[in-house]
Amino acid sequence: MMNDKLNFKAFRVEEENEKFSSAIKEMPFTELEQGEVLVKVYYSSLNYKDALSASGNKGVTRNYPHTPGIDAVGTIVSSTSNKFNNDEAVIVTSYDLGMNTDGGFAEYVKVPENWVVKLPKGLSMKEAMIIGTAGLTAGMSVLRLVETVKPADGTIVVSGATGGVGSVTVMILNKLGYKVAAITGKETEKQYLLDLGADEVILRKDFEALQNKPLLKPLFAGGIDTVGGIILENMIKSTNPLGVVTACGNAASIKLELTVFPFILRGVSLIGIDSQNYPMKYREQVWNKLADDWKFDNLEANSTTISLDELSEKLSLMLAGKLKGRTVLKLV
Image (cartoon, rainbow, N blue to C red):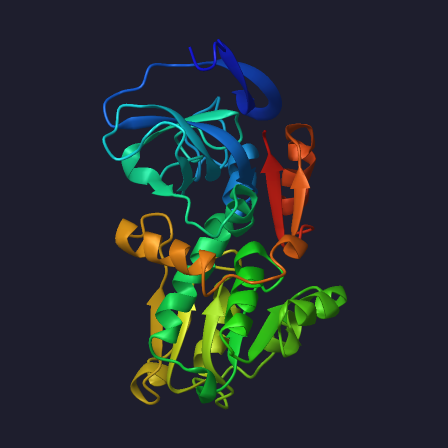
């Protein structure tokens, strides 16, 4: 069928008696429906949602067996779409990929045409997955922030700065000439963040310990938050008048305990980032920027490449908060 192959390898998560296990399995090809494409996956990447899905989190993936992987890049080998041709290099991220639709931790993935973006000139496949959903989310956040806040306005504070979204955010902002204050809970990673482009590093425990007041001393022109909870609260309360804060994560908490004072006394704007269903028009815009004027020189230095055999171990480390930067899965 596809290069005369009858089956392909995939990282499968299975459930038995409410217990979950994972293994590399041989999977059969299935027929394409109208408007679908089959992509030979060259690279995928690890994201927190993937780790949750692989651990059996029913809030991410309802039914098992399942193949996680919310990112994939490769070439189209079969298509019922008028938008894409065979051998075309493409990126597939977010939507339902890897959540309730089998994802990129496999040699092949079948997806609707509306989930697919052409790989921009200026990006290799590996670079696209170093960026991945995490970098795309970072790019969406930066895109909204820079509409209002300029480098001359002051420092931008970034939370979860050693993680996938945070680390790419630090690099993009540095590339664009912004001063960056990076928040991290990892005291040993200060030099890593300075090397990425941060101008200063703030320990998470210190930022969380700021006084519990409706408003705090204005310190930042804007902020990009990836964790939620008290970090986001304090970020909003310490943002300058007319500053902008974006929010894209809730690992710390889904709750936000604030007064309206930052918004009505300082005019601070809070912008939510939904990378899963971000409109294709803006998705393509961000990818093109990441391939061109937002592209940074030390992209490879912020990544580790692994094989399918190493995937289970790395997903466990991600759940434990012991990975930094981006982890790329090589399939070809």
